[in-house]
Length: 238
Image 1 (cartoon, helix red, strand yellow):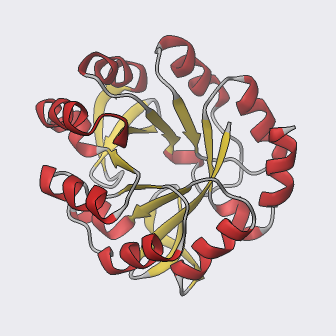
Image 2 (cartoon, rainbow, N blue to C red):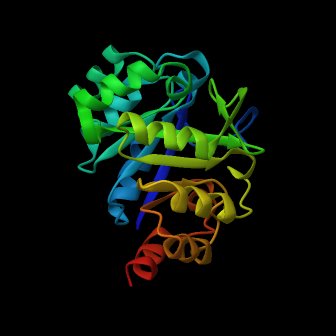
């Protein structure tokens, strides 16, 4: 299981939101590039990046910061946030993004997702962002009547190779992951699942490994010191 540090970018800075609420923001670092280099130095094998401004607007907004991180580190990077056009996917892969994460379009434009999966294969992942059991879109601001399991199965049918599950109400809370929902998704779909939301201890990471997720995205807990990345990597690898 990969432990993947999260770098959420808003206004060019490294921030964390509480439960996806844009009015409840904490700025942790002014320079996201320095943060990326920090996680690389501590042993990360991959970075998870989100353009929060892009997620809310539907178009990437922090492209210069993204380019700076891609140029500074040697790690594979997965990126989401406002990626809703084929040209954007092509641009990101061309600049060196290893994995592009689709969210809103997975609900609103199945044909586009299917086409992108045929064209870019393993470079495409879909994020299933859930609030109170139902998928949310448009930067987590718009609710739907679609469940995680229903969307996940639909994605598997059209050729998506990897899912990222986030429980929005636990994201940024330092509570705990939604182990029950994650287990249901892992057992109900034959796709690799990366888990996010509420991970705040090494014990949580060990439980997620037992559930057989392929990755765990850790955000706020790394920035507050609740999880030490080097120690977590040793425990999970061991």
